[in-house]
Amino acid sequence: MVFLHNPEHSLHEGTAHSRDALAQACAALEEATSSGLCGAWGVASWNPSPLPSLIDATTPRPSAFMVRVGLLVGIKTLDAADAVTATWRLNGNVVWGMSPFGGGANAPVWGRIDSRVFLRDGTGLSPMQAAFRAAYELPKVGTVAVGTDSPAHLSDLIDALAGQVDERAIEEYRNLLRARLLDQPA
Image (cartoon, rainbow, N blue to C red):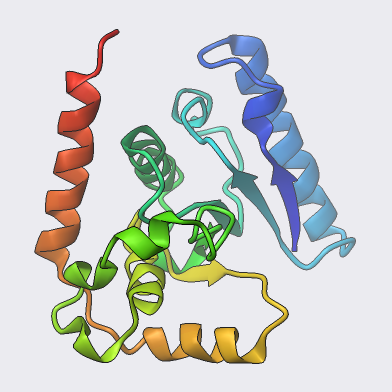
């Protein structure tokens, strides 16, 4: 899998040149896949906000789309990821998540919240496990890539997949993020 990383860094929302540049980059990766230089290709975006306005019917569809996930992701990124997924007509299995703990599972925020509120019955999981499981819904993804040098941490994350997400709590959280955004001064 070869990823086009962070195309938003070199593209400008809404410009014809940027739309063409993204389409050409995607076409080059599609050609590399067709010719056997790689098995598949995708787009990985830390901030997909500019991408929905740059994707159209002529933009080749990637094999995977990777985006930040989890409770620390803002509503603009969540909504943009949903828009990219819808525009490219990607099913959940090809939408991947990254950085479910915002870059650090040891960050102080994780000791201050109980993310089990996002599960139907989270009493059997730790708050970190619940945060990992909720990350699959913020935005909706089929796979989450994590890095660790601890087999125990990886085992805990795998065990978290048995948790049942409370869809209503996730939607309420997204609505709270939207409301908070609307309350911020321009």
